[in-house]
Length: 359
Image (cartoon, rainbow, N blue to C red):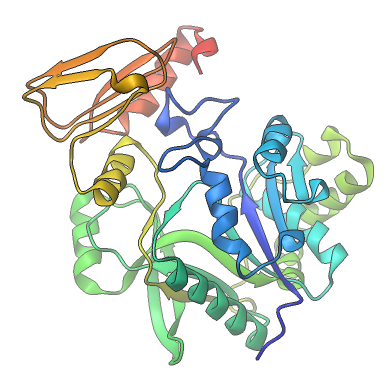
């Protein structure tokens, strides 16, 4: 049995979650809120991984503005394991900073990174997938692995990964040809029919030194400025880190190849109100979801709805279909669930009107 002494988890929790406005806000984004249970999503994420990785080896990457709140929500995680960026500089800066800090602690570290705001069912299957990823990277240290989710519908809101060839039998592992951006409906239907494409979960597993070498060879300015920031703590040094996406296209994949490990657990990125409604429907076995204080929602004749409130106003609906209604003390959103991307347009209009206090 392989040693787990050098296994670490990195949970990224710096996102703003604007697609779930008006509940998700700049100062309290979705990962810190209770969407599907009595715990915030980030606490559920920690619970999911802590059975196979001890708390002292779990690190949180976040923004400085969220650090105190996360520490409050995760009291069992050592304070020094909450790594705060002074300002957002993209996913590469986040990975590089946290990975360098973990590597300094343990030069042999292998890291499993994951988002803080996803929902995962089938816990044992998920944990076995994580173990499989650690085992593969232990045996293949130059590889960067990623967990892919087999699509069960033509989803246009997720990125995809195209498989190249099977490179291992037990557990099954594939080499990766390329990442694919969010497709159109027609293209997503084609992806579903081919069995060659998986959803991109953005759950990576890699040796710390391998990822850092790959970053350094691609652009030395990444680590040079990360190291300056770690030494100085100055925001000005962090601002010099190139702002790049973490996707592996910009890394030499011949030298540091990418491998996909299929994840057969139920997974949702809870990326918008439509996906949250779909998840809650699976959990409750009803398409009419209402979550309000004091049960203060009255409906007559509506179907397939999501109603969430954090204020005490009475919400009444009649003869509606496929609607999301999100009510907070200062804002009200009414949305056709077929068009969840319109929330992005709403955010842009709010900014144009100078009403950023509502964000």
